[in-house]
Structure formats: C-alpha cells, structure tokens
Image: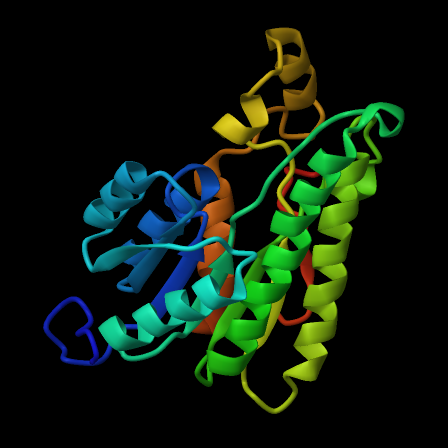
Length: 249
C-alpha cells in the first residue's frame, strides 16, 4: 500500500519512522517531516495518548508502540510501516534514556537500563533500518554533545552515546552501494522535558550561556537539521556526527 504525496500529484510519499516520537525532539521531528509531505510512523514506548495526539497532528501518520531494545517489537514496527505505507525511506532514532550520577555513586541497575535503551535500542533499530531502507533513504541516530564535553555526572550517558556514534559510523561504511546515508545528530543543551527535569534555574541559565549564541537549543532547531539530512538535499552528507549545539566546543 502506498500513500499519495500532498498536492494531489499521486506520487508516493516518502515514509519515515520516528522512534521516541511522542514528545520532545522526537515529536517536533514528526511534525517537521509531516510538513515536508512524509507519511510518518510515530513510535512510542508507553504514552499512547501523547503518541496518538502526535499522529493526529501530523495527519498522514500512525502511532505504533514498541520497546526499541526488543528486536521482535522493532521488526513489527517496521512491518507496520511497510503494510500501511508501502515501505520505509527514513528512520530517525530519537528514543533515548538519560541517567545522571557521579561514577562512584551510579546504581548499576540504572547503568544497565540506560545501556539497554541507548546502546541495544540503537543497534536493534539500526539493524532493521539496514535491512529495510529503500534506495535514497536515510538513517539518523541521536548522540549528544556531552560526549565531547566531559561534564561531571554524565559518564554513563556519554558512554552510551559514544557507542551510538561508533555504531553509526561503522554502519555508514557497511551500507556501501545501497544509496542509504547514515548520520548521527548530537544536540547540545535543548529545552525539552528530558533536559530540564531536575535542574534548577541557575543551572539552566548557566548552560544556556555556554554556546556563543547564548541560549538553549529548541526542539525545532534539531528538527530542521534532521529534515535536511533526511531529504534528497542532504543526501551527500554521510557517515558524519553533526553537533547541533550552537557552537559549544
């Protein structure tokens, strides 16, 4: 089954899967791609109400629940995209988990949960994307600028995102000849619920002043980068880590 592009041209729409698409940066990406004419599959972990709202706002979209670290569930997610829209052209893996604590104090169960979502989840989604993306397609994973900033309490999170970067760069080379790009977007501090949770106003203000642009990123800033990399215009960018952070070094 295919879906027609807006404007009545009858041409099949490009199809995107966005994991973590029910809130934050993922939800902004869902809306941005929808405005570009994509049919969108909004993946979510547990908040059905928010995911369905995101799909309704996008228009030509469906919400599909899946634990990104569960290979059976993720295969079913890709099956749903193919059955509803005819194939998959873009995969944006925005789902993630963040736990902050000094190395000496981190609960190792939290470390395991973090790595299950961020490392195994990325690998599972990338595996299905590598098998199923159509020529001209794009896989976009998510890292974080904290990988290079070495901020205290971020060791476990940064380590998991370092693994995402390594996986992404290797996969870009493994897909030689497929006409599929693989890139990582690494935002800096971005005003989402995930980032703001647990931080006092002084901490937020201090982090907002880090980039030369002297503000926090906005979800739409990141969505614009993703939309470019997912599009034919961004197809020459491949095997890269894009640090979308306002100039933090």
